[in-house]
Image (cartoon, rainbow, N blue to C red; front, side, top):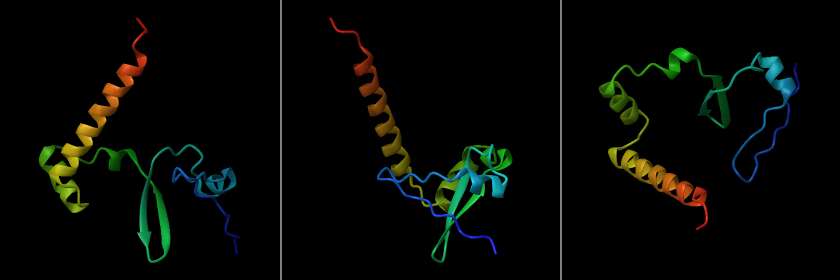
Length: 97
């Protein structure tokens, strides 16, 4: 039996996967994953290019968002937040006068 490898969740809610675990899974060059909860386990699966680009048009995207519980308001709020962050970034980059 292969022994489980402990990992740590940081304050920023990030987990670093040990290299030996990634090697064991064949994921050393994997950049994106899909995370899911099953019972009391967090499941990670490699996200393939086909899965990343499976939304063909806007109606598919809306159906996908509805399926995972993202509302129009969620999208509107996310866009507003991103624009606000972009404005803050621009203000920080302005040269002093």
